Length: 221
Ligand SMILES: Cc1cc2nc3c(=O)[nH]c(=O)nc-3n(C[C@H](O)[C@H](O)[C@H](O)COP(=O)(O)O)c2cc1C
Image (cartoon, rainbow, N blue to C red; front, side, top):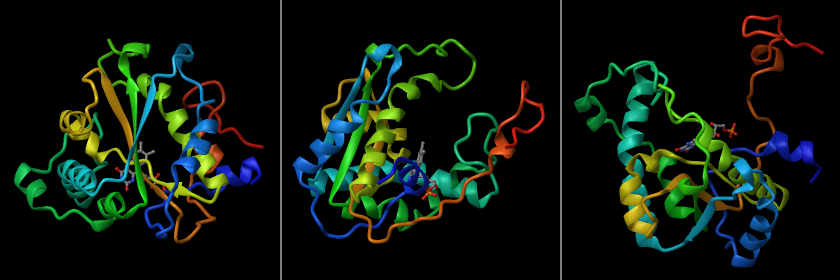
């Protein structure tokens, strides 16, 4: 596919055909994704290819607690899991909130699940001393993650970046034998999408790009 076509149609695929994803296909996709940038070109990424049913069930169990809170906050009109505005949703409400199947089923039914990790020993986390949640470390793993999904789209495959399970990172590390200094960036159900979306909903450029300053004039054509 042509690059802009791939960029405009790489969506969050959650339903997959039963076509298997052979290791050779994953290898080819990673062979292209490995050209992603990372801070200092340190390439701290690691990929764990999961097909085992018990491991998938454990991934679902790790996903559920964060998913409950996510959904409860959405239902309360909040922006879920944001680190700025404290939640007004109480623990009991979170606990009794059901988790929609779309947040867990792909982990069980996708032909394969990719767990993408990053070795924090090689990441320059430049914002680590600021009094806000860190974002810079992610920039050394998410270009790679997105290259995987762009290459997948190019080849007729797809997946979704999911992060809910990472709220239980210590359990994930124990489950998969990941060392403590290695963070989990994404858990990606992956396969051949049942349906290929072609129209994604995104903001228009003038809504998010400004000239010179935060409150500058919108960038237009
Ligand atoms: C950082 C990040 C975390 C995400 N976490 C989840 C998740 O835990 N579960 C899920 O189903 N989708 C998750 N998504 C997928 C987004 O919901 C999806 O990309 C967004 O709704 C746009 O979907 P579209 O590309 O199909 O329009 C995540 C996406 C990103 C970029």
